[in-house]
Image (cartoon, rainbow, N blue to C red; front, side, top):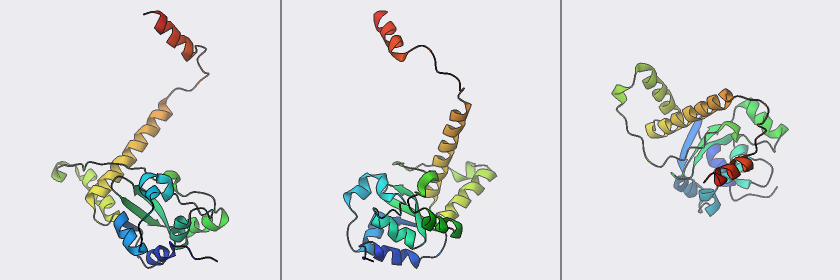
Length: 182
């Protein structure tokens, strides 16, 4: 089997403990010994957990028992999450299936500031739980918590949208009618 230039990173991740491991792109480059390609900074697809052979970087972290949970291209940070044993079995069973189906796509650029003491006890507990999950990084934890809340809100909106047969009125007809009314 041919060696990948990302194998060194897989060895590094194999040695990491815990459930989550956060890194900056710069830290990852120091482990690798070379710069990440421009596509890693521009396209979220570079971070996809595909074990189909076309993503040698993904093969390195998946083979080490980790997956990308979230890649923040703006902040140049990535969070890896350890793959559970039953999830790891899915890599072998269906190697083409991406694991990112529920990963939040956070692209926050400005830090959120808040007075922690003004949060109610439940909100402080949630933030503390997220912060522990992300190695004590409160900003990272807050970013993820807010993004997950946004996703849940959008899902509720989608679910509350009435479903039924499509309208017999064409959008083209509505545009023409609006144009002709002027």
